[in-house]
Length: 150
Image (cartoon, rainbow, N blue to C red; front, side):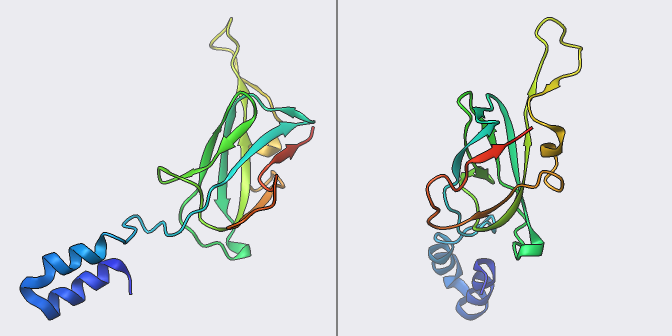
C-alpha cells in the first residue's frame, strides 16, 4: 500500500489516533514518489580527453522496463567528472536510461556569437546519442564513464 493510502486507512479505523500513528508511518516514506536511488558517478571524455563542462540527462528507457517519471541530471566538472542528481537527491533510481550530453563553449569576446559545441551534436539528444546506461546497485568500476567519439 502506498504511504499516503496508509494514512487514509488509519484515519478511517483509528479516528483521533490518525495524527500520531500516520505521522510515525509517514516518517519513513518517500513523499516524492522517487523510491530507492543509488549513487551514479563517472567521467565524460571525447576521444580520450575530459569534456571540461556541460550537462548530462539520463532519460528513463521505457523500452527496457524503466517507467520512472524522473530524469536524473548532472553538471560536468572541469575534469570531466559528474555525479547524478534526481529530484535534488544525489543518485538515480535503478534501471536503463538513454543519455544525452550537451557541452558548449561560449565566445568570451563576442557573447552574442553562437555557442560552439564541444561534442558532436548527435550526443545532445538521448534518442540519437547511442548512449544507453543501466544504473545498478553495485556497478563495475568505470560503468558510468561515458567515452564519446567524433
